[in-house]
Image 1 (cartoon, helix red, strand yellow):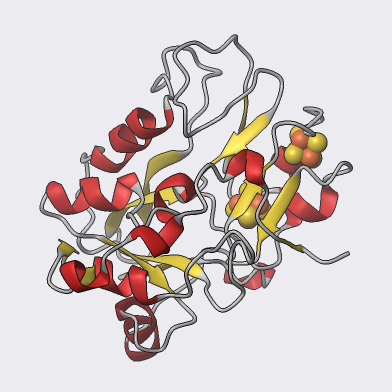
Image 2: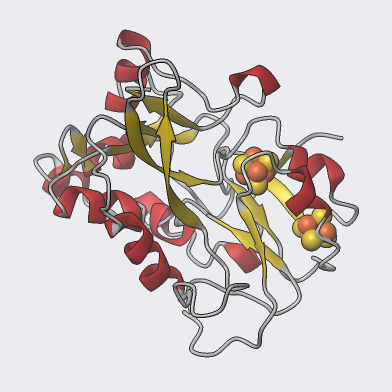
Length: 253
Ligand code: SF4
Ligand code: SF4
């Protein structure tokens, strides 16, 4: 069964996407060091007819040398954007978390954000019995709340512990981010923002905190900053040995 599935309207509130963006006015807009909105606008746009494009593969490059230990700006922004509680209860959802890694040989520690890695070969999709867990044509891995039965096979299958089960009743949900008690959820790469031509909330927050550790863009576009950096500098996938071809890459580790 193919992992790919085109846009599902329930999870993609806006298909206006990039067509509503006035490219001429965006040429100079800097969102983070080296990230220009025009770069997103120039990627294959969403249209009502085509949905997400296979020409695009959204991804992130996280520079752990810029990520500050103790800074949780990305986590806070994710919680705010997506209507998450921020961990009031131990079972509350967390879509992005900060982790510290330590090199045993040198004792050097590094801080980095961990979230759904938007795998090209996602085990969460392979094990889902209903098709609720799916990958969009542009590489974003999502859960369709309407057909998720809460079996949590995907939670067990994900090597990155990137998925949460919603245990408690939900209040004050965000209109753009549908959630449901009894279903599984995880980082959507802020698909509702990306489809409007905007950056994921964590990327903007990291830049505003003056760290600029997260670069977002189209890995398939050789002219994009992210693709150029991945091509020119060493970067890694976490658990590269699993051959999942993650959309989130790390440098400086
Ligand atoms: S990181 Fe986990 S939840 Fe995300 S696509 Fe990969 S296997 Fe699925
Ligand atoms: S919890 Fe939902 S998304 Fe995960 S495997 Fe079960 S039905 Fe699929």
